[in-house]
Structure formats: structure tokens, C-alpha cells
Length: 203
Image (tube, rainbow, N blue to C red):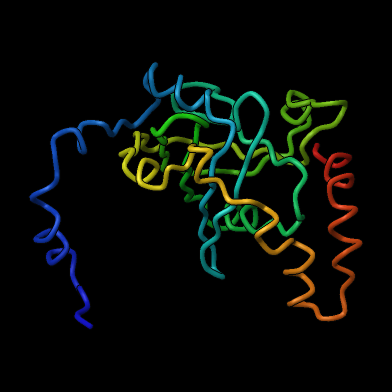
């Protein structure tokens, strides 16, 4: 197998396809139109880096996954999850992060690269109240660059086309995957109780 070992080799392969639009779309702060896109996204992937390596975590919320504070600042509440705190631990030690936003029905995705800090400021947590509950922390994100992503990946995957949706019953359940790893594990009870447990601990 031939391995590419330098950026120069990559540039030789891809430079012919680099267009003016690919460069011009990058901004160092939210433009009014970029802000509209970010505020419309209920889901994103959060990528972080730390001493143990990389992490990529799904994040979702009602009415927009992040709060836009200004053209350079976003707030990301940390709602209930698995309590592993992989992403948060990374950010505390290395502020670099990357975000990819998805908007159901749109083939245009948005990307942000920037830096974050983790805050448990009481007033900030209170501002995210949902059903009488609050996030335990909020990630305050400073934008370094923002741009929209070429739509080809979503078009090729037909991500939003119902005819391509996979039947969940054809996939292993979370309980089955845990049993395969843990051995002595009650997968049936876990899967049966999970929907109700999740509904009670959404926030």
C-alpha cells in the first residue's frame, strides 16, 4: 500500500479541485446568515482533544443545541448524559474543540473551530432552566473560524430520505451490546426500562 507522507503530496492530489468558494466561505466570527444556520441546528457533534486522545460526543437540545451570545461566543449546556465527562475533561486540560452542526432536512452542515472553557457559574446555569432543572455545567465557546460544509456527504448518504432509514429492530440493542461486553448482564430488563428512565432524566 502506498502511503502519503507529506502535506505537499496531498496538495498535489487535491489542489486542482480547490475553488475560490472553498476559501471564501471561512469567517472568523458568525455572520448574520451563519448565525441563522447555527441557531436552526438542534444537533451537533463536539470534538475535543486531551492527554488520553480524541473524543467526539453527540449533543442535542430543543430549539437549538447552542445559545448564540454574540458573533464570537456560544454557550453549550451540558444536559444529562452518561457522566463519563470525556469531553469536559478534555476541554479543562486543552481548550481546542471543533463542532459540526446538523439541521434536519437540510444538506448544508455548519462547522466551527474554536476554544472552550467549562463554567458552573450559578447565574449562567439558571439561565438554562428546563422543566425546573439546570445543566451542571456550561461550555463557553469562543469561535476562531466558522464555515458551511459541502453538501455532497449528506446527499450521497441520503441522510434525510425515509426510504434509506434503517429499521431499529434490525440492529443490536444497547442492552445486547452491553451484554456482549459485560457477559453477565440483564439485557432484556435494561432495554425494557431504558425509554422510561431516559424520559425521566432528559434534563
